Image 1 (cartoon, rainbow, N blue to C red):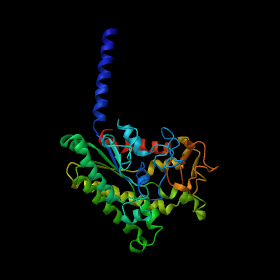
Image 2: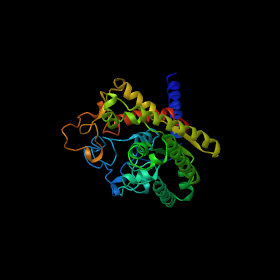
Image 3: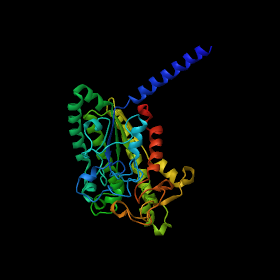
Length: 352
């Protein structure tokens, strides 16, 4: 009987391992477009002040080194890649430390400070979305040369394409710079951005992408910078910005429903980070957080990038107690929680 029991256990384990292998092989690579929430260091290699390749950024990253990620450690797409059985980090396409063999299972073209709108990328002279797409076309050629045409094309069609942008379009452009706000009402500007997002998805589809996760935007009004300046609202979240986030996310979600009907063979999901981040902000103690209204670095109230001084006496010692790392960006712990939520609630479409 013991012998039969052992055989049964071995068969079960073998079947389980086969299942895991099949699940992991559903996605061949993770390919990323977007802004600072998913930039792993592309901005290190372009002339812009929107950088984070210095301490204290990256202090909790493996090796304790700054990489250009706007966090104390890994970011959301790193955790998603790992959850899919791929590499635990996704490298930046412009980083010469990596080659096509590394990019074959994961690559990010994202650039901190960018958005859907070309005018947004102009604010800090960063990589616009159209340029990220050009880099992707170059990546496709390199991938096929490296793998061979059949394998390269298969990798392209089985890869998961992720986007994360839109916040800068509102906070760095529409509500800050003259121009778009005189051309469009807030709703018209949302529609303008959704049109760009639609065209981008259609272009990706035309290039062979079939598994696409279109990212929504977080509760923008709850970022520490916005709370710091909300003196009239007792330093609470700025509700009008959160309302914009909700409206824009609804429009993006509706657009994904339409494109799923229009484009044969596409699997397009809307991955919305709004709810998980808002839940963390509203009930921080459930997740082990103590501070929601300020970031860890410097005073945590208005700093990001170079303003996060490596020598600041105010920088916190334990980032895991903070929801935000700087005045705009979450800590590694928060990114991990959001990634888990996205994997379970949106990426199940891809059998993750």
